[in-house]
Image 1 (cartoon, rainbow, N blue to C red):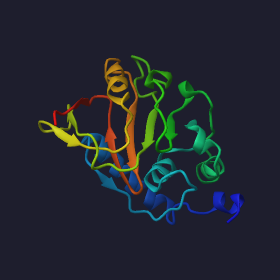
Image 2 (image 1 turned 90 degrees about the vertical axis):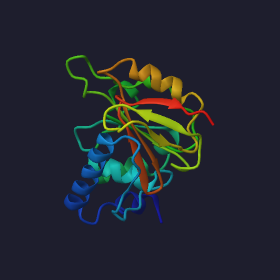
Image 3 (image 1 turned 135 degrees about the vertical axis):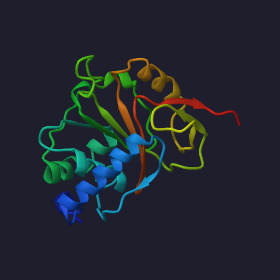
Image 4 (image 1 turned 60 degrees about the vertical axis):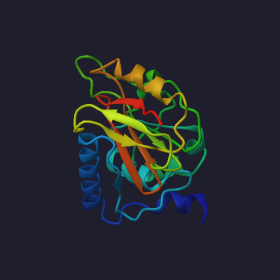
Length: 202
């Protein structure tokens, strides 16, 4: 399949219905941090963009939302695919991005490089979507905060060692800061900036 065909195919079959259902799942995921959701729409984004990440991109991105892509994604057919299906403009400036997507297995840059909003408009921040090899079976992390009864546990595979430090710095900016969605294949979980994340003792 040529680059062009890949960019023009693989979107939502029913854009309005699919986007609404995924948006609802994202809202639910942000309200209940750490809950793993599985996307239903059968889409085929170009590699290395995962299905859940692609679904989120189709749901949230439009011509008003600038998108930053990590190097592997930027070099693939993803920019053309995103442009065709969402009209979202790409930016190379992390601080200008409303949404940012990274492929699996790459180092994380400091979250402070992304837009963290302002005290008056904390929602003008970047949502960072990080692709991982799996959302279960890795190092256990404890989540606490709004939307969590006492403690929720997640165990994503492939989060870099620096993640906890970067996240602690991000939380210190509250009400500013970025929100994160971890994705793997067709699944995702949300980590809003209000969530406290610590490593659990083995």
